[in-house]
Image: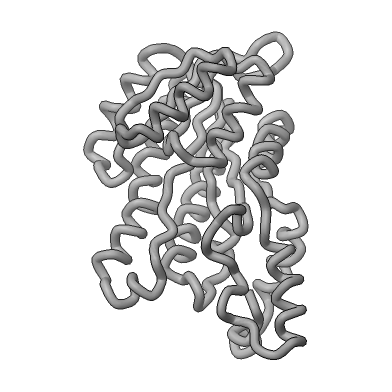
Length: 266
């Protein structure tokens, strides 16, 4: 349960090595969150992440979680919820894939879709049911601005995030009035991400200036996303963009005719 000041006491992270998730966990620990579960594949990185959060004063446990093993989700996550109420679940797992390779290797593309969408549907429904059973809590779903409109540069990844985004919105509607909040988070490119929205798309000098402007509008950091998540939890916001200007940018881009959209450095 949240404390007397409304701060969550417990956090479950699905995708325990995510930079955004760990930045969010650090923010919440500073706000008196005391129990953190990091769920992910066993690795030195997962253990290092847990140690880093323990050093900040939290009780941190790790649990084996594989997004691709949907059959295990109910049992694995059920054990976490059986240990006590969870105030916030942060779904932060996913893979960007490699657009060029994935177009050539359909099975690689399927892995992106299964991880980012199918795995999230399974885990999301399990967590939503557990949160509803306890009568309170928040489910935070890391979507992406890439899911708002398909781009040539990353349409396989973007399509998986589009499915996740639609699922999370519908789940939020289904849980309305139950005491469970669902918040969809739509970040732009998160530094130090390797993939850049303008990479390889600029042409002449004028296009380069346009590309630089577009990049600035789409770029953020794990810390900025974490701050927005914490604020959204406090305000019980349903959808947030990071940076906030993306909301206006995407509102415009959604209505750009496709022949023109193909030429934009986004």
